[in-house]
Length: 243
Ligand code: SAH
Figure 1 (cartoon, protein in one colour):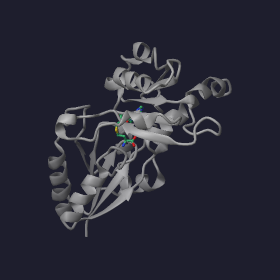
Figure 2 (cartoon, helix red, strand yellow):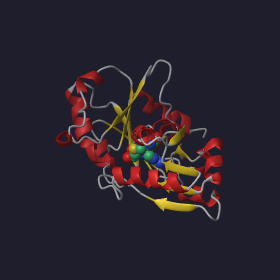
Figure 3 (spheres, helix red, strand yellow):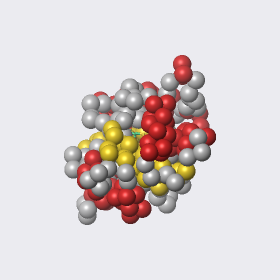
Figure 4 (cartoon, protein in one colour):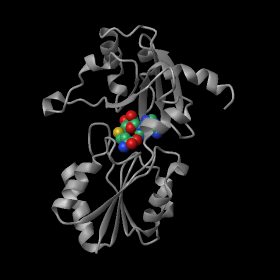
């Protein structure tokens, strides 16, 4: 009986791969992986393991989702251990749920293997704890990738009035719009914002600013990058002194 492991590879730093993920990678007959996966993980696979890149660029998917689904299904007919490897966690804007539903509809066994999501780990490794007593009692992870014409849900900015940490994934190209919208609902100009590019990797870049100036400072950073908005961003300076 074959099984597809919908596996999170973590945000980049290979040491953030879980032991469970490492085990299924080592046992895999085929690994189907995305752009954000640290390819050093593939060195852990068996020599005979087939590794297939189905990378997703920002907008343009190298392999459309229905083709990926088809590929997973086809491989499940041939191989026993199939690993679908994605950056971070596969159900955090990773379409893991969609792939699971598809596999279930085809009667293919699957298992979710959680990964360390960039939404939490990237700010954390940059010394920005996403919750902190007295500064933030909640956090929200939001996609900056809105395609209204395709009928995707649109952000209701009014709901961001409360003080909480907001983490935008896939949002760098929307940075200016995000800042404008938050200023429009009454956040102050000096409200803290961080943009973290290639977080947890050796070429990580952290830019700190405010709703007023972060766009000018961070717009040209390389991807992947995420945006953190909230008072917790201010903790970084103090934490950096001893890290
Ligand atoms: N499933 C992934 C997120 C997929 S959406 C997870 O759980 O992490 C892709 C977005 O994640 C990117 O556009 C970027 O905003 C963010 N991201 C992923 N890895 C990152 C990294 N190493 N540094 C900064 N942002 C990252």
